[in-house]
Image (cartoon, rainbow over all chains, first blue to last red; front, side, top):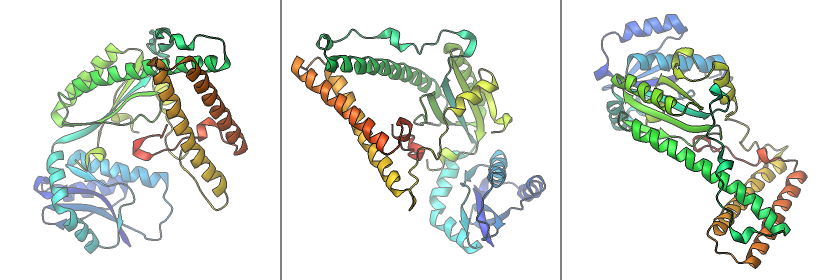
Length: 246
Length: 114
């Protein structure tokens, strides 16, 4: 049997309820967590069969649910699925080798939550005029492209596409700057991710103090009012997966 | 994602799902080289890098056009060169049975290459 690591918590911030919490979690998820300690750090682990090489979607969901429930209760450093160590002593060595950075990270994460904001292009909502009509904002064409040769026609087409893309990038940058200026007033950390597709305008993860949730929601609502042609999605709170290395 | 994790969203849930479906990160953009498909895997990787360089050249050319620093002859040469490059890429894509969508790489947390 090996040990599957879920999360690391700081026992200075843990009260006597942890055993009660573990009992309840076992009832909800059928997974019995164990605690392995090193000084102030607790690693929350469960036994896992080494032979288990096939991972189902359900395994991942249960793992995520457990990490989520731990993070609702305590300040955590969440692990990714697949953090497997052979024995208790390996976990202790792992904690020992990283004790100072884990302690510092937990201190920074204390009493904070992660949220995700996505702002999507959407041409369907409310029949509102979509600002993504960049082709209407073409710059005047350079004189050097005027002419009827194949080369010039080819370059003219490329140049028109280029200017449309430039307008689009500028538009996205303006929205992003506006959002950043607002979000930085309440967030401890913000990470703007590179959008995974052209559908996304903003893909951001935000770490805020728990007490600032309503202020975050207020910013999102104002953004939505300002850009009714786009869809904003606010999700969370999540375990601070994106801020474990701060 | 649990519904209780969605604090706010605009539009219908169906529309949101449809928008998110378009994102589809994951395995599509990764090099999947096996002993059986190593040739096409390598071709995909090489053509992706060539396509990246071609697009960078194209963008730089557009900037020079925008800056109005090119003569008529240079414009003719530039147009012909870019056109031939694009045609050559189309030929290579056909040879290796690749589409525009294939010519990208998913760089994990860094997003797509192009």
